[in-house]
Length: 330
Ligand SMILES: NC(=O)c1ccc[n+]([C@@H]2O[C@H](COP(=O)([O-])OP(=O)(O)OC[C@H]3O[C@@H](n4cnc5c(N)ncnc54)[C@H](OP(=O)(O)O)[C@@H]3O)[C@@H](O)[C@H]2O)c1
Image 1: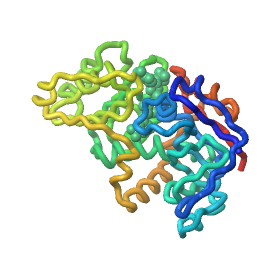
Image 2: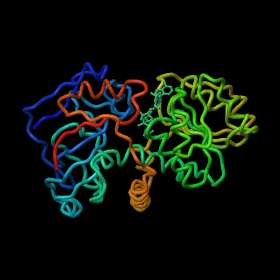
Image 3: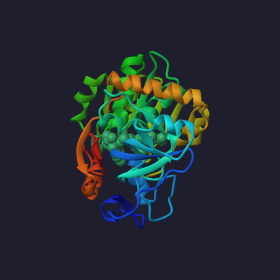
Image 4: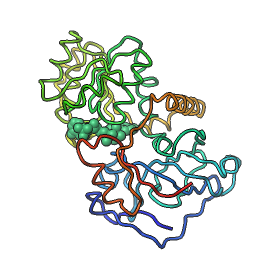
């Protein structure tokens, strides 16, 4: 079979190569073998290849944390047997950018027939994170303000639509003016462009006492300004490091305002949840995907052989949507 590999950590467009003569991996008991159809290029994949992610694989390694495929074989066990022949969303740290992959049977979720491969490929990482952060961790109440940076990204747009549906209000930070109208059309209550002035000042014109809830995947100057826009009792989840820079804030600000700043990582959070919570989460994700709330806009699709072009596109500012790798046909 064919797969993407990297032998050293580095710039994704430089270190990835195609291997086309490797045997397909075989599933052990409790595992399934999946024939992959498509997989997105997420920021986490790019960081993983660069050696900057929370998980560091033994090299050579195959990237691709999520995707969609068809279960071809089970290594044994009831769940794997039930999954055989099903089209499934796959979450996996053994690499989905391959014609065949192996993962635990409980890490594949059957997807409805009317869900396209494009949407099913991005079932886990962004949709589950958007729901978990806003509904399970922060539990943002109706009418409350949520401030988010990188709001024009695919996850940011899901949070905007979730806010619109669940009646919490969003203040959205972007770095390009052309995103303002697009985000308002999705239901954003307010959009701030970073270069129009300090984020806390722009936020306090709207919410004079500062916001109670914030999420930031950027860090650096942007993340620090998001923290400074929190009001009394405010809580912020740091869930990404797009700027690759640290956040900073004065301790007195945290103490005086009784602030809470926490990291959020879907994989770690999911491990702490019971089976029922995860089943309920997947059911909610499916329903919200059907309604278009957790929709992913695909900017471009590349065949797996053009993985270097795909990762370069995915790493470019203003790419306008998710980049997808097409790996196989149904
Ligand atoms: N912790 C978790 O469990 C978890 C789960 C899912 C996702 N994430 C994180 O969520 C973030 C967003 O993911 P995504 O799939 O929505 O990504 P995406 O679609 O690629 O969007 C990224 C967005 O971030 C903006 N951006 C990139 N670098 C920036 C910078 N230095 N300063 C300000 N804005 C910047 C981009 O702006 P332009 O449009 O102007 O280029 C774009 O709007 C990533 O950091 C990802 O790792 C974390």
